[in-house]
Amino acid sequence: MDQLAMTEAEINERVARKLGWEFVPEEKGARWRLKYKSEYIWAFDVPDYCHSIAAAWPILTDYCDEWHLDCRRDVSACLQKNYVTGAAEADTAPLAICQAFLKLPVLNAAGPSAAEIPQVQHL
Image (cartoon, rainbow, N blue to C red; front, side, top):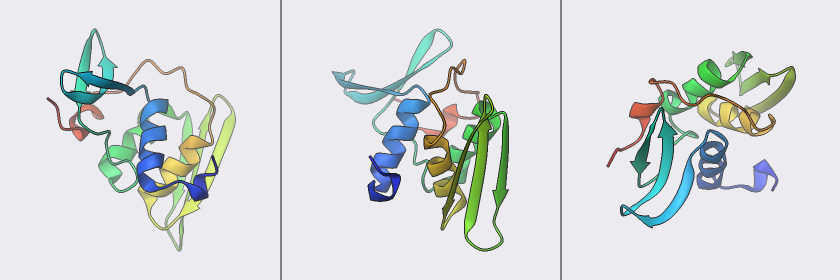
């Protein structure tokens, strides 16, 4: 699906899935889970990566080998993982980060850092 045609909710969901979130219907009354260490974190919704710099920032710090943000006019993000680059421009930094992140290949990351975990409403 073309990223320009996706809604922000669809972008949030694709980013979450790429970061390891799984949709689990009707289990514990929650919808999403993320494995963290040996346990699962449950949430009704995925973090709002498109609007929250606090939610999007760990994408840069925990999952990318190198990154660059340029906020002089429109915001542009350039992310790199395993020598593959994803770049995007958007109106806001969180959205640019998300769009660039979705252009990168699937990651083999160990999981989220502790910094990412508080960004969701835990059950």
